[in-house]
Image (cartoon, rainbow, N blue to C red):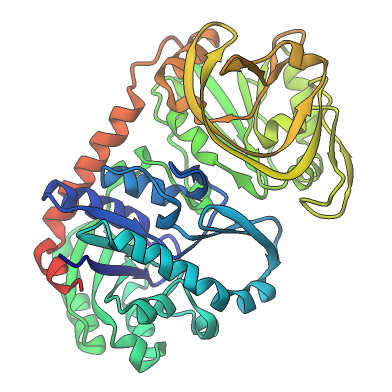
Length: 485
């Protein structure tokens, strides 16, 4: 049987394409189909380590999980990891390929299309159904000439398209009708229908609006999906999620402050903490101060450590962190955050930008040298208190110094990370630490919030099941499958 495929493009970013693909992957998998997710090009600093050794967008890793398969680099052959406002690291089929500014990358795209199509064909060879996710907006006609993420891919691979609109942000009629209006007629001909996502309220009130879209576009309506509030239990990929209001827990026993800096990376490290009922997770953006009653400060990963340090100091967070430590508070730095906690970060080869050395926060007696070689590996080990964990490493650079004599963990018999002499400042390259119930529970107990009663991995699985049921109710899965080719 030849695999069928269908693609979901959005009227804009954050319309819920990733979530729809994850839910549909689980729904069709439950029907007995071999489903594979695919995103030709992704832009995100929230990445996952694939089973075949490279890195892909976090959303495709979640979608693979929903389909019951291991994540592969071929599920996201082009990953752009922003390093500045105008430049990104280009990862091709899991490996670093180049660093390019926006205009340079535009000229590079057609050279990358064969890699995209190669990965797509590899997935098709082992699938009944490939669910393809577009990127950004289908109506970005200014980027169409060299496009490999939306209509460029759909036309090259002969994949039908469903356009997804987000009614929660308003203007969904104009966004869908406008998309049809600006698309090239041959591109518009690939569209087989539309889905309206994130609806709140009485759906009967929107029937005239839906009919207006059908009349203006000629596209059939394939689904009208109510807002799925449990999406907060699933790892988010887009940094836009960091701007959403956090869950407020006035009676929380533990307050954790997370610094939100430019080029923040792997911020799904925070998701397991956000679902803990006794934890108040505060996202601290530049322009605000770290609350004085914070118990734990987390410096998350960063795609650009030195630029992150500069932004941290510009926001005055270095003063807040020093005061927090003086009050007896705890600080943990994850990956790039670990590097920031040391005395210096050296970039002799200009990996992140101009070559040079930056002064760190000096809270750990370690020094980091950035290297062009990237560490990408799954990590299983034991922390210094004897608690096991499972996670992964994804970083560039090596860190050494006296505080490494007090390692945070042991992985395959080798020491990892560093702890300050007073035990209150901790650095580690391990991501995914808090997703491990054993490790998260140990942290909560150590900080006075008691053991966890949340089985995080089970929560993710049950949420995917409920998402699949949700979509089965509100999307015509049989018709959608018949439209795939």
